[in-house]
Structures are given as C-alpha cells and as structure tokens.
Image 1 (cartoon, rainbow, N blue to C red):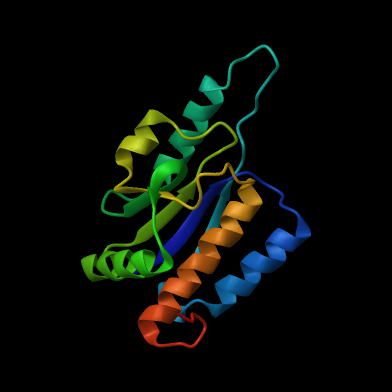
Image 2 (tube, rainbow, N blue to C red):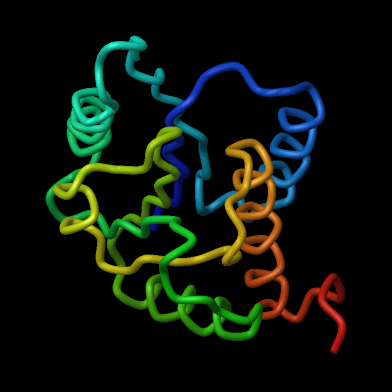
Length: 156
C-alpha cells in the first residue's frame, strides 16, 4: 500500500517544508509516502470562490485512482484520538488499496470530492492554516505507525 498527501496550495513557509520533510523521512519506506501539491485555483475579487473550488476539486479527483481510498481532512469531519487513528490506519492497510489524504484549498473542497471520500477526518475543530494541517497530519500518521509497530515515539 502506498500513502500520500494531496494538498491544494503552493509555497509554504520554510518551517512547514522542514517539518514535512522530517516526518516523511521517518515514515516506513514501504508506504512510499509522498506529498502531491496542486496549485490553488485563481480567484478574483468579483468572482465567488465556487468556480475555484470546483476547479481544485476536479484537479484532486483526476489524481485519485478509481480503487484508491480517499480520506478528506476537514474540521467538520470525525475527530479521532491517536489510538483511534492507529486502529483506522491498520484497517486501511488491511484493505490493501492505496490511500490518499486530501487537504483542500482555502475555500474547502467540491461536493464531488466530499462524496468521493471514504472518510472525513477532523484534525481539530479549529480552522488550521494549510501548512500546519500538513504537519499535523504527518505527525499523526507517524504517531499511528509508531503505535502499531511498537516504536517508543508514542507514550501513554
């Protein structure tokens, strides 16, 4: 199984890139984890964000294989404890299909993306900056893996 993060948005602060690299290096090699960045669709003052959200949604869905599992990150999703994420990750891996986590653009994701998602995960009820959401997602994936593999990173 391969795991990746698809994130709408380009250039991030240096601390975000550093943290993302650090966690990606720690993840198991057999995940072949990668981050796929998609550009934010152009928005104008006169135009509502609906067209941009639809364009970003289309770009996301074009990168998802028909049999790939999609987990959407959204503050309105289901909150999980670290232990709960570890259990879910084990189930996702047992399924054997590739897994994509998706962070939408500044105005969220299209209805089509939301419908395609097998699970909607809330990192927090707070609205997080996209860079912080990337780091938090990766840290929690690393923590979930460490719990399952007996690595001492997680302490209870």
